[in-house]
Image (cartoon, rainbow, N blue to C red; front, side):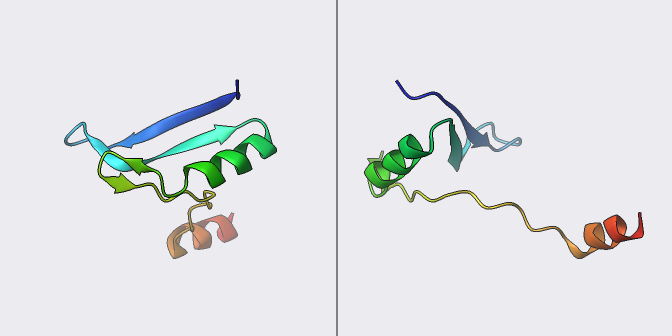
Length: 69
């Protein structure tokens, strides 16, 4: 059984799912296998698009603030 942590992003105003979530795997091989197997699989009426998460881009204001410190 894979060891993982998962969460679904919820809209704070409606309490409903925003339609995406994240899964964090302990084992890289299990992650790669799951990404390959699940990409394109339908969830309800829509195919899932699976990819690795990327860090959020920092806004110009935060970059300037961090540089000033």
